[in-house]
Amino acid sequence: MEDNRQKGILTVVSGFSGSGKGTVMKSLISRHEEYWLSVSATTRSPRPGEQDGREYFFIAKEKFEELIESDQLLEYAKYVDNYYGTPLPYVREKLLQGRDVILEIEMQGARQVKERFPEAVLIFITPPSMEELERRLVNRGTESAEVIRGRLLQAAVEARAMEEYDYILVNETGGADDCAERLHGIIQSEHFRSFRNHSVIRAMSKDTMKGEII
Amino acid sequence: MEDNRQKGILTVVSGFSGSGKGTVMKSLISRHEEYWLSVSATTRSPRPGEQDGREYFFIAKEKFEELIESDQLLEYAKYVDNYYGTPLPYVREKLLQGRDVILEIEMQGARQVKERFPEAVLIFITPPSMEELERRLVNRGTESAEVIRGRLLQAAVEARAMEEYDYILVNETGGADDCAERLHGIIQSEHFRSFRNHSVIRAMSKDTMKGEII
Image 1 (cartoon, helix red, strand yellow):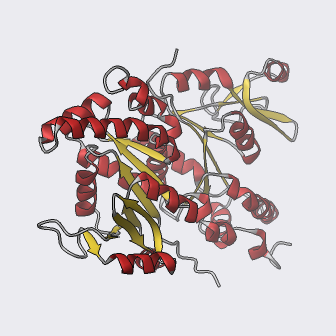
Image 2 (cartoon, helix red, strand yellow):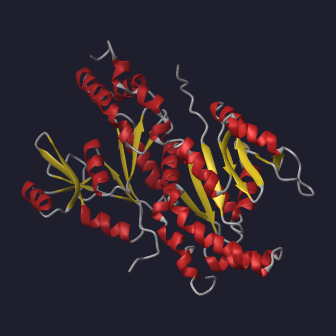
């Protein structure tokens, strides 16, 4: 039995640290309530102001490893000594309900998602240039020169993998709202991809004409 | 030498006879002047009211065969005893100028375009159902029952090939403007596909950092 209603679209959003991706996501969610933004699980401790279930689900290492064992994570990675991952059950439920789901995750996780859900849409958000990225990181004033240097180097390495994404959005300075609208436009257009519309094809196919024409 | 400005997008629009595709295209062009709608060449005689260079370029059979020989046609087909095809030079020129070009052509031509320009975007416009297609053809009142039967049969056969298109747009009754806006949204979103944005990837790549970071 197949449901004719289209399933939700799973979108992955990644971007360099300093790309302004967080601001873009906030803008998107505030204008378009239809999206469901997935919350990751992590084994790291909450930072001041962070709330369980909002920034992350904060869980114990043993619990996280149980989720890995029982294949309940859509993707996960270990950074330093902490795990980060996306619990699968919620995501699957929302998609089946026809809700568009967005994951804001790193490249490593994006690759895992694409492997598991080839129909997922991968979007990469980038500043217009390396110079602009450096300017933003410096202006933020929260990191040392050495950390900024590290972030730029990481960006330069990650840039090679931008091609693995389906779409690239340039987040111009002060352009987070524009960027959010483009992101929205991409997801909306993806709903019309032919591989997501087999029910339309079936409705027009020869089989439905049996006895009428043939 | 590579131009950093993005080339225009080549979009192919096809649809069943009776899909309302013509109305959708008129709506699109009247709202969005940025698109350049290609005019086909044909060897058939102009019908009353048709104007050379507007509906078609009306040319002699010998001239058409010259264009085939000299590889000046992006696609062509022969129906009954007449040739129909898209002259390549204009299309190429507009694309290089960064202009988005739209071809309204049949399936056979769409396939030829995709083969020659794999980055082209193929969009298929369909009524919501066979019943609705039949209703529209009957209401049009211009064709005999036999011709309508033939068109429906052709649609049923063509439906199998809908999957070859990148996108499927359902043109609901009275919804030509909505359909045109969706078409516009798709082309706009296609501009952000990563394979059309190598210059952005280059701007962020390691090479641009030489001497600064490494």
